[in-house]
Length: 481
Image (cartoon, rainbow, N blue to C red; front, side, top):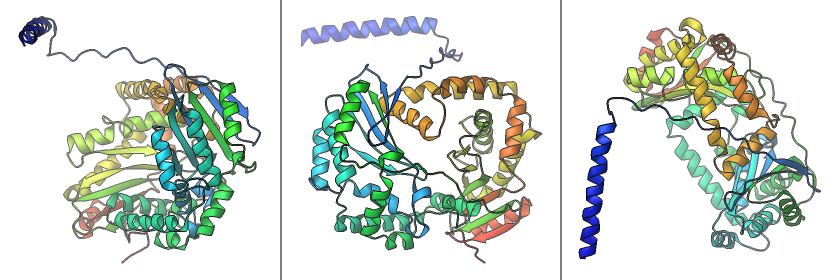
């Protein structure tokens, strides 16, 4: 006890001296200077085509005994789902964890738990994936489980009904969430009900999905010919190739990458406010925008700089105005949803109901401002470039992030040297480039303004702004009187 008191007293004396010394040298009236920007170290990787047609990508990283493994399928719900079976992709992905010819769902979960990992499966609009992060020592047994799920899933009928019920409950709950309603209606207004980008699962399509649909979709979609297998971590290329060939020997060859030929977009219309009534809502949810360019656009770097200034970071123009200066919102932003197709440009956020009209004016002022009425300053341009360049090292911080970044380049058809070139491309963006791409890709004469809020409170003030005529829609984006 006496020794403990002596140690405590000595520690207290040391801290007191250190604090006093620090107080004498640290000027708390000045903001500390920024540290040295993190250096960008882009990893290298190899590419090999396996016997089943899949592309194997390996990036060795030996600093920790960890491995990220993923199989990415090129193409997703937009390319492979039927309009009347929207939701089959998500149900199929979830069913891969429900049992195989050798293990039921509980046994799969227990086996993965004993290995200290899990296998995640997901299918998005333009790609799908199945993968895990494991230690080097548990890579082989985890890979065997993934292969079992991929090739030998049995799709139990009772599991399908349980998952279907969960999806239907989630859809019902979504109809009470203004953010979900706004996103759904925004997509429907921009792309129309017949375009894949304007479609999503609903109660009718989810109820129509049968077990035969799931089995057939799995068989047609999960094919190695459209697969990119990315492995990052404490491995060697030769060792990984041998392990993957062995584990996936039963995965039959076949499958082609889709062409991503999207239907034509609907005809443009004049700037319009689409109002969805949410009686009693304390906030109005804004989505403002139009279809944007694909990820392959040569203006990508300039668009990133422009959007960073407009609404891509906390100190952006939109957030500085509507949140920080006016206090109309807890946060607003903007961005492009890039992909193979014409993903949307969107600006928006949740606005206090009583300020819906004033916020709309501010949104439009900032959107027009970035197109030239409010010139970009040298400081804004430098801050945006620095933010884009200095965040790049974070994309290579973990094995999973390295794997995702490399895979994204391959899926989007971008060069292996993209990130080295991207730094240079961002660095040479000018203020003129910012204005040019803002005018080209943000079409304010034909944009859609989707607002979900209390119609009785906000319709009159919104109309009084004179920004655009108002059309009333229901929760599904259909006209309503």
